[in-house]
Image (cartoon, rainbow, N blue to C red):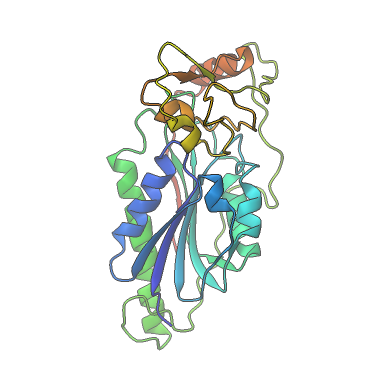
Length: 288
């Protein structure tokens, strides 16, 4: 059997996960290449099935040490593999990837995929932007490409040693070594955010506000909202759920969106005070 299609799938409100997923997929030459951006709710309204001759590269950001809880049902119920080889990865904002990668590997196995390699990449924090500022940088992109190419080389080697021949992407009947990543399985509780005084930061109901002097009513924020929660007819109104993904803030061309909730701002300050040390990417390469 040959790998005939590579799909790079990602939830990426601020663009960092997308950048890494595309870099990995594009580093592998040969098979048909497709992209599945499930950041917007309309893309999460259908099911996607993957065959045994597909390779899925899938990435999500880590929120509070876990996969985003409002996106998790899509991963569990709408992505189905059939012995499909996969490369799961997560992005974390320079604090900790927690159980994020172990959770993604766990869910991949439960839905018919064969995770063969994995990674946790330190990228610029969604709202505490001083953390890992500017990442993924060129070095991070090279780490991602090397991981993908290492998996692809293992796929080719697997085909050769198992009688699959030397055709690019030939798997034959070879098995890959069991992938073991950091974190608990099943995953533990979500990280509880803290204020600068060490007390719990409670901002579950916080929503973005609009600087009406800056806002040009272009509707970008409503179009990019990962939950579809901003009213396109009145972009100052957010009647739906907000997961604090920062898509509206980072993509507003006028810089008119921001958060002003006191606990949210205190947590942001706490992060930018205590987690400044540069975190390294953690890579789990493919092994035969």
